Image 1 (cartoon, helix red, strand yellow):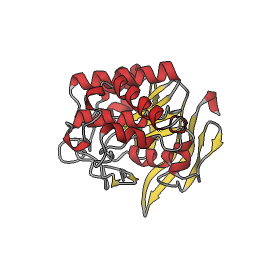
Image 2 (cartoon, one colour):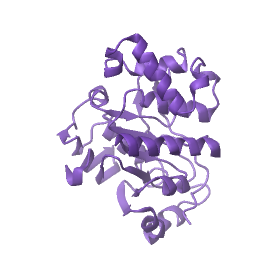
Image 3 (cartoon, helix red, strand yellow):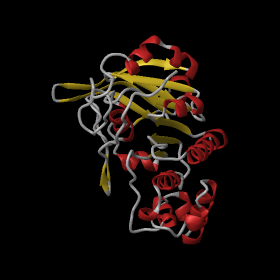
Image 4 (cartoon, helix red, strand yellow):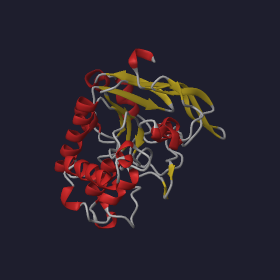
Length: 285
């Protein structure tokens, strides 16, 4: 593994017909690191997440998890070996309570093997850590967007992950909920050594939370480094604020073709990911 990375992708290429969605993308995340992945709409962020999580097989390149080549491994295999992912749109099971969503997520894991009582104890521990203890018996459809996203994060943590992929986790959250989210992610990385890779349109949130930021544009890595370096990079500012990202051109991420690239979303059992809406280029000042 490069530099002790627990998740590593190299030379990733994906095409959709004649459209090049990703080209020679390289990214690595180390244990205990929080890495942000940002870029204009259509840059290829969700497509890269689909490749990393096994939903989409790349046309070229390799993905490694804890040193093992997992390029051809399905999502379920990667999940059993410590990879977890959330999606742009909530994928909770609506017919189950919040607590039961966490119990189901432990199926086959070490907590589940400890018996039903231990599995429910683990669910209660995670919900308390996420500030959701009072909502254990609630159904996902009754929750505001922000709390629903926290519940989905809690489900991803039901079995302690080695790698956590968060796709727009702060979308729809209040300022207080975003602060709670950041606290949970920081503790996860610092206390459990989890490698976190997150996509988020709120660039300020990313810059405050992440120790390293990778910028995608037109399906390629445009810049990489600590937040201050990335924020000051002229190429990054041009990608966000230059031609082609004003009103009516770069403001919508629909799950189809964006400006200069493709955002396709992902598919998980129980739902189809179609993308969200971003109405203005972010402020990277």
